[in-house]
Image 1 (spheres, rainbow, N blue to C red):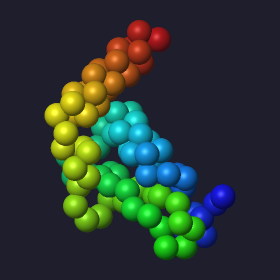
Image 2 (cartoon, rainbow, N blue to C red; image 1 turned 45 degrees about the vertical axis):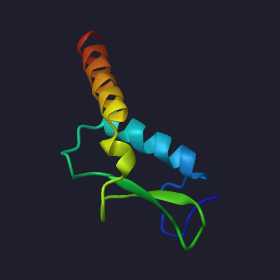
Image 3 (cartoon, rainbow, N blue to C red; image 1 turned 90 degrees about the horizontal axis):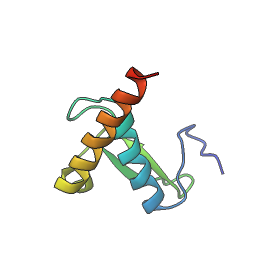
Length: 82
């Protein structure tokens, strides 16, 4: 189901959180730039990324920060060794 806002939709909070972590891993956003949280849309009922408001507590978790850092490093080496 697509949202009338045109934003990418995630059918559950869990999928949106996983995608948020993957996005933060893949793209090198500044600390408070890019998507920093998710919200449930009033139009479609699904979840979207947002760059406004408070940063998700998920992104403040030390194990998640480490996971993102390791994924970024792996991506760096994957691109470098191609």
